[in-house]
Image (cartoon, rainbow, N blue to C red; front, side, top):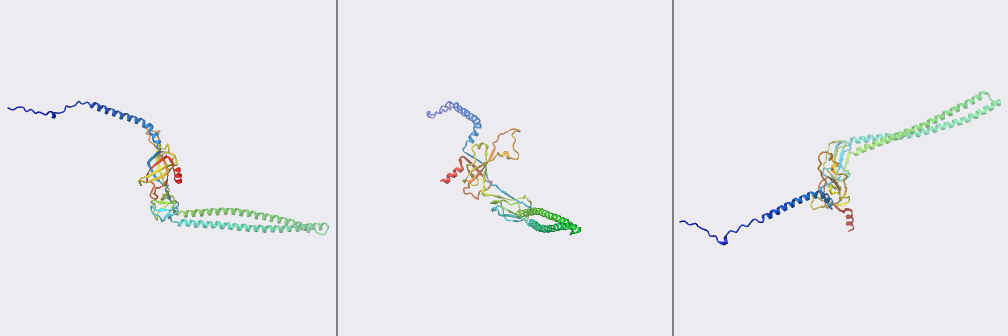
Length: 383
């Protein structure tokens, strides 16, 4: 007969008694408290941040933005006269100096215009000389007429004396009436001749005035022809297209043999020595920004290199004002967006990157509102 087997467990190996869950309510209370703290903190941030965030940002000593890039006042070179490109003397991305000949337009037609204008100027000069000679000749004619008048005056004196003598002889019965009448007739004739000669002299002098007017007209014509010659020479000079500034030539838009018209853009010259930074700061960062403050600039292309500069000037308005289609906040729903204002930063030192910097490179600009660039430069010079 089988007997039930009873397993005797040693007292030391007996299972421990299960404690009562006394700590669960305590943990639940802690979680509830933490959750409430987070909610209260969130509500506090939601209330405090909008009210004080702008003041906190505006009060920062160092204002930074990565919405910035290097710029240069690129000069586009355009044709001022039309014609065919006969010579292209520079390659793309070639360094040039101001006055370097870049390309040349066929000058044949413009040289012919210069020759034509020069001939016209020569004709106007010859007309001036001709009038001057006529004026000199007219002076001689007037002198001759005045000499004839002097001769007639002398004849009139003689005839007057003869008339008086015949009148005296007639009173004494020594002269006939015929001689007296002849003397009177001679006196009238010489008087008329003198009047005629005086009129001729007046006419010759009036002709001198006419010649003077012709001389003025010829002078004006000479000036007009000289101006036409100058314009023709200017147009001829414009067939030689030169670099306006020192810099590097961009991609050329023309090739030899191509016909270009006046105003066509041919190439651009980038002045590499006059780089500056345009940084677009948020309006909330501008409270302390002033011209002359020191600026640190780091270029993304050259990590570890830091350029120095100073705030040169601020834009007169935000970028949205200069956009093609300015926003009209008076219509529709409104969402407030922080606007940006461009700040031009002049570079003082290039940190050994001369010739390596290029317009358009991204940079990060930091304005030190508590430092004046000019004062720091003077202090460095003193040291």
